[in-house]
Image (cartoon, rainbow, N blue to C red; front, top):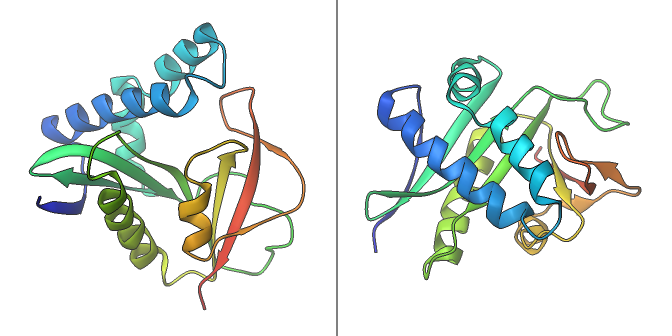
Length: 171
């Protein structure tokens, strides 16, 4: 299986791939954690075509898509946007704001490819941070890659869902 992770831009193909991935992964990731109506509103508000185009074109964001045999299977959004965790004043900070791979037999290889690309892109920053739901299946992957759970409980952007912040110092 050929697994490749690439940057995505706001072309018709890029928007189509991200539209499918963002909706599919939101359903997979949050479907058992929040009410269906709340999840539907989150998807409509966060992943409509206009919002995706604006977010892809934002200078604050970089979007990565992982492909398996040329089929888009997952994505990550790296951003300088968002309320940074406490204690990071004076540090160059970047956030992996979205990260996910669709259920597939090559799930682990695709997650590794996507994470490796994220870490390479973020390597010039002092700290990488992630805000992830408490019961996320991705926590093990983040911890294996050096992310450390921070004390306290946060809230996930756009959803009424408890989350936890993970930090990784890069330098």
